[in-house]
Figure 1 (cartoon, rainbow over the protein chains, first blue to last red):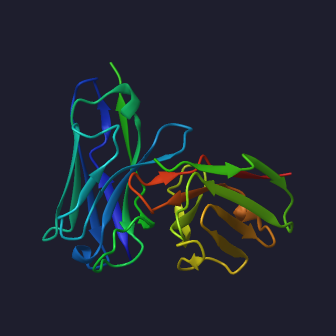
Figure 2 (cartoon, chains in turn blue, yellow):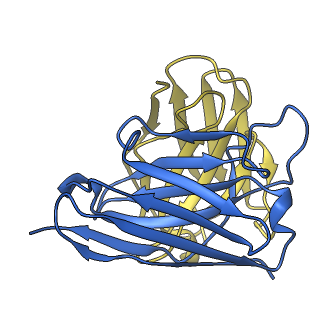
Length: 125
Length: 107
């Protein structure tokens, strides 16, 4: 069974940092793109970041570029989202998601087939 | 950035009725469109990827169609558990973007 468990959310002051972690199990982690998607309270979904199965391609939404860093450890089946210089507008539920199909040549992913339960990030003074 | 416009914003229907949800892209995205269902307090669930490919364990009453700029999600006969939010999402170009969502509510 595919499982994704996020952790690391919480309350942080503007300008602060948080490190979100997503522990994956139930599949061959190194074969899949992984994603972070966020949802502000009572708002829609926003794709934050993606990372290729081998970590060689990484993309960020403009709203977080230069402040957030995504990484993965295929030996530990974990993907990390390091969030710095946090702003009030970063307040959201952050979801880790796995690509719907395994990676292959010339595939750039983008369909989130499995999702974690989310971890809530609140940026407030 | 590719903008996805979903309509209607809210669909008020009764169980057993047919639901037709629309998603229009600001430019052609081929078939690179996904549909998700989200219930309050839950993570989204993938329904379809690449316009018409049904994800695992999605009932046959759901169908996805379309290509280019116009896409449709159809629920042939609404079950009580289908009342939820539905989002479309494109993967043709980064940044990946979602539509604003359609709420399917009980009439």
